[in-house]
Length: 183
Image 1 (cartoon, rainbow, N blue to C red):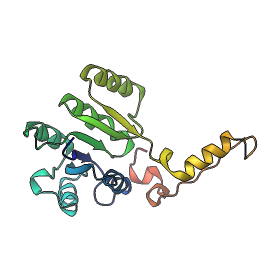
Image 2: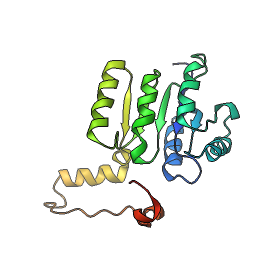
Image 3: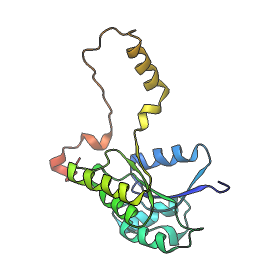
Image 4: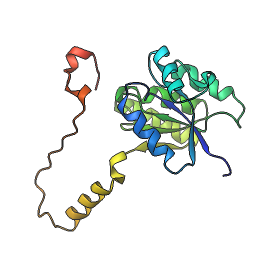
């Protein structure tokens, strides 16, 4: 391919942790470029986030429901090639479904869906459309994780009976009941 692969991002705007991580990873091989986004459920924050990323105002959307149909109407040489979904977990399915319905490939953060019914519907849509669907498992590629896996496989740590993992993030310290978070 003689041009960069173009993507649009759903989620990952101002104040979001994972969006920046995905954008950095996508930019590493210089084969992919962010061309549009709906970065927040708040339209003003979404558009401001797009401006922070130096996207043209016409490609900074207030919601994915606006972005996906608008991108589908653009000439093929201008529109995004795929959608990267980095929303909170319970919001992965709606933009994936809409993207597939409009002919876009999807790369979603895990989990693919929030329940089995959505997962079955998503799998059927991918099968019917023939479009690509990718699910990110970011940490499987980290050298430290690969080394730990190799150590376990080689038996260098003995028989593993228990694994305790911590992944501290400030926003996760607040009780769900106090925030309305669904994760």
